[in-house]
Image 1 (cartoon, rainbow, N blue to C red):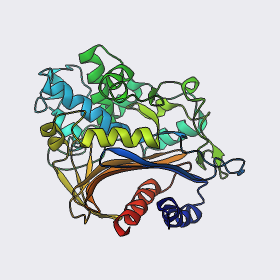
Image 2 (tube, rainbow, N blue to C red):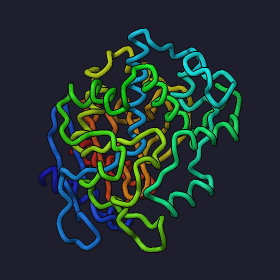
Image 3 (cartoon, helix red, strand yellow):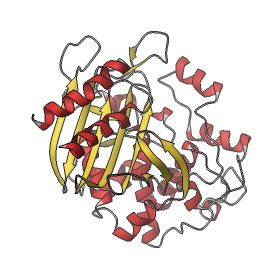
Length: 347
């Protein structure tokens, strides 16, 4: 049976169970793109198949790119990962010293806004008019730290907003510019960019959510990218797999820096399909995987679920898999990526 057919048989039930129209999948083995496919439908009306080249918000996979940019800047001597952010940003809204390393690894104690009723209400009522950066930082100013820095772990989008803002301040470049310099141009990416407005995303594939009311609706032209506080990249499965593969293979940063990113800082336990999850610097790792060292990031938000993971020894070969679905789900992008991994492992 052909590989594409095996993948379709493995992934199809996940889409059916989740009521998900389709998924775009890309696969790189030994640094070469070997498969780029679209499964299922582009929209709920089944008007066309989902193209392999469909564009999505990659949501929190963007954090991996920001983290790589911070480490690159530190390697050049402009930032110190173990210095407090207040050294570079004296008016940071929290007075307690927080190191860049702590912010990168979600061990700073900075709060998040995702579960706040005010945030959810604002997204639903004015999806095209996001909060400002100061609005997000005000959450940290008002709530303070969740714990003493370095003594716990809590996922914080605000932390990555702080890192993105620091990068813009220290480089004098926009996020688009510093990611273009580090990733997009060197890798020759044509469909990947930082979305700043609804006008930027007219080419997004339809993405379905029930967040606005009880019925599934396409959010692609309603949900402003500014609702992702740290900024959000748009990409395709093939270009996303290229970025993650290049990063993990030492093409973007030297291997010592990649080792820093992939060094476990905090253990999060089992989160299937990952056996034992650890958080690093902008990466999640599976420290008990049968597929060698596994590192990458997943992302989710209105309309899409995304995952991009590198497996150092999947069927004995370095392999990177990216998956994106056009309806949000509870880590369904990760489930799709691992379904592909299991197919390869058994091939």
